[in-house]
Length: 439
Image 1 (cartoon, rainbow, N blue to C red):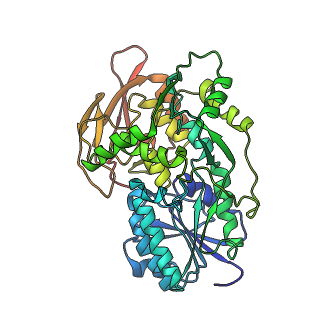
Image 2: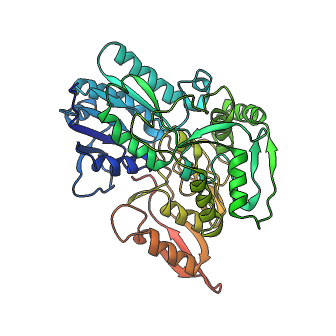
Image 3: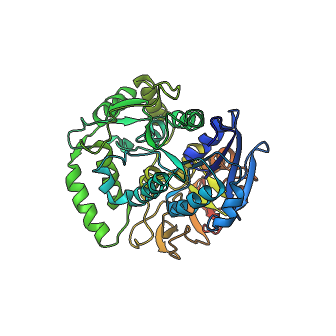
């Protein structure tokens, strides 16, 4: 490939990592184009070249990638398998470097590679390595551990909601973590360091931290709160979760323990032994930053539920999907969780007995009148729910509609909602009317 990169393609620019990658790449000297799924209503700045393409068609993808030097994939987990077609198209188009959708745990580690929820990522890695060994393309894998500020905001690794955190094992295990901003800057810098990042994993680390230390900072941010700490053994949680997965029950409770295992269990590579921050011109974060994040979380906003961490760690998440496009954290996820605070844990495609988080497109059901109802199960797309109804304080709905829901463009729009007073003082009933299977 040329020594100087000119043309970069970003695939999947609407998730957490994709959105920040778009922002940072757009600020570089490179010519940037975005591949958007044919039929998607996602919108981008007018300055960004956007190509609509059928992601299942290698010929169409090959045409879209002609003349491109680097392809960066940040596509979500439920379509991660499409990356083999994308890789084949990149090779056919003469692309020199491919970055698959990683941005989580260190799956170069032999133990982490055996974690079942990472199987698809491992398969994509192996496929790229095979093609690189044949001299057809080169690759870079980006590992950053749990996203620091996103993880704090969404109670990842340690859940401080209700001030009743549960620590895994003794809570002292050190793991590496990076800010979303840093990951975006890394993706923008890699095209300028192709030789140094060729055919290897790049490790991005803002800070080394433990659950115990995160809890101490959370307590420092809110010392007046009634903290109640409990402990659980990771291996016990993994054992129970494995039994559930073996039965085909792919719920949050059966997936999260495996992710936690890869993050906090010694020997799984969660504590990086090297960092590429210096190579890519990146800085580091501090505990002061974490403290400020917890102050905002615990004092300046409502508690958030746990989002689908499987989707987050396996690939960048789409927080909510409806007929208007995609919502992404933090502000939009804040509003979705404010509107549906009782349903903090998502279900999977195959679970039928638990409440689901409305902002999660791994769900197979919906909540109507505060009760779980089975909806159409579809493995490749979000579920269909014609109407989801809930009563909330009128001022809360007004706030969310004003701050998080534009009248047009990308996001959950005001047109998606019907509202009326339900007879309770200060309450308004709202209904989500759009088909959630449309992206």
